[in-house]
Image (cartoon, rainbow, N blue to C red; front, top):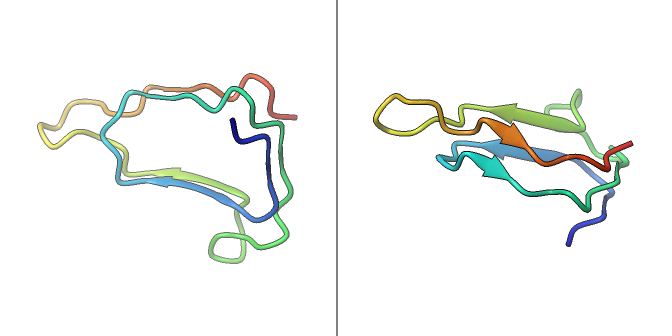
Length: 62
């Protein structure tokens, strides 16, 4: 149900395949991850070495 983020969104070190953020419309980026990124996605894989995150549900992000 998240619609707006004022800072940044960090998705890291997860093992899930799908991230349902369909309601997210805006990431303002008033504070940035590592002073560079409003959206950072990395190291999302399963312990067995297979792919983890395969789909982001960011259909409404503008």
